[in-house]
Amino acid sequence: MGTAERKIIDVLEGKTVTPPPIWLMRQAGRYLPEYRQVRATAKGFLDLCYTPDLAVEVTLQPIRRFGFDAAILFSDILVIPDAMNRNVRFKEGEGPLLNPINVDGIEKLVMPDVKTYLAPVLETVGRLRRELPQETTLLGFCGAPWTIATYMIAGHGTPDQAPARLFAARHPKTFEKLLCLVAEASAAYLVAQIDAGADAVQIFDSWAGVLGEGDFENYAAKPVKRIIDMVRAERPDAKIIAFAKGAGYNLKTYRQTTGADAIGLDWTVPLDFAAELQKDGAVQGNLDPLKMISGGDDLEAAIDRILDKLGNGPLIFNLGHGITPEADPANVEKLIARVRSHGAGR
Ligand code: CP3
Image 1 (cartoon, rainbow, N blue to C red):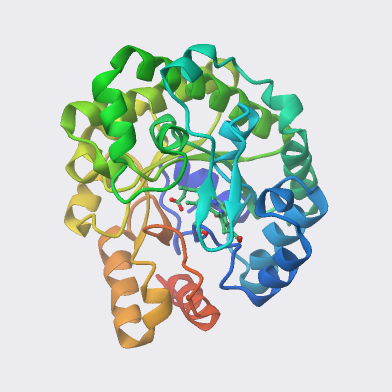
Image 2 (image 1 turned 180 degrees about the horizontal axis):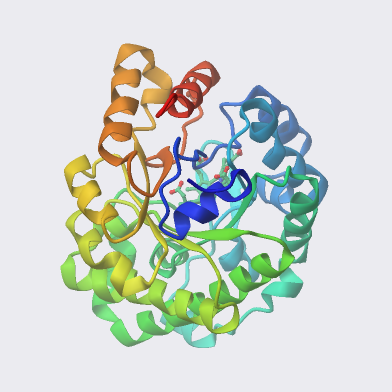
């Protein structure tokens, strides 16, 4: 068992902590009335991310309400393309919009000065580390190059990232250049977050699941390895979680290829396969986020299945993707209570 102060760090080092620590992807967000209240005072969503007073407040809201073992910095993965002058904005009910980039645009892209452009986010990280209880792990994050590239090329969300997949097939060299630049900017950003006070960081590859086998290796796994190598070259002890949503069987080699301390599992990953992946190190996940809407006995059974299969190894309990706006906060409370009762009396 780990010491109370570093439960998540202990798990990231491969230790088994009972009961497992828990946090939820997107734990600050629209399912919380107190978030919606703060959100209404900000002009746009990115203004919320770039205003430390507000970003600190919404990061702390789920910690105060639920006492999660980790706080995740309130920001967005698209601040990196924003720092690259892609004019990121969020339209109510429409998701993100960016100026779509083409071959010419990529050739002209330059490495952004993330420390200057994202100074307000780094200030938020520093303030959070000072305000959070010592036992709460502070997580920083960034998007993986593939996922960031999909938004940069299409200029908006799509169901299958066809624009980026077509672009990669037609212009492989230019596409590699884009991935490398995003990886370099992301590594600098993660190092800056760690220096500002983040205890660990997560890399979100939300669109890894649309890639075929060879493309997964080249566009998802290798660019994430690049980020991790660059971060560790500067901060050798950096603790890193890599979440490749929809990666399925590709996860078998993902930890080894990338060098991540923990791999995030979406809710479609079978628990027997998850237990196999756990033999090589920590896993994080993987409750279906919709169970936070439906609740009931089915929720309890699903939690117990994860605890039974993965609770006796290095596990960070989480959802298999972000919590949705329709989630019932009462179900989040039930989830935490049930996970925390795991192994009681042993
Ligand atoms: O987890 C957290 O609580 C920290 C904050 C966080 C947000 N986005 C806040 C957010 C994190 C870690 C992210 C990551 C993110 N952003 C990802 C990767 C994880 C995932 O969900 O797949 C992606 C793909 C994005 C890009 C993005 N941001 C989209 C597609 C959208 C629109 C969809 C939506 O949910 O509205 C966003 C907006 C966004 N990011 C919101 C929040 C709370 C909602 C905007 C609002 O409150 O007005």
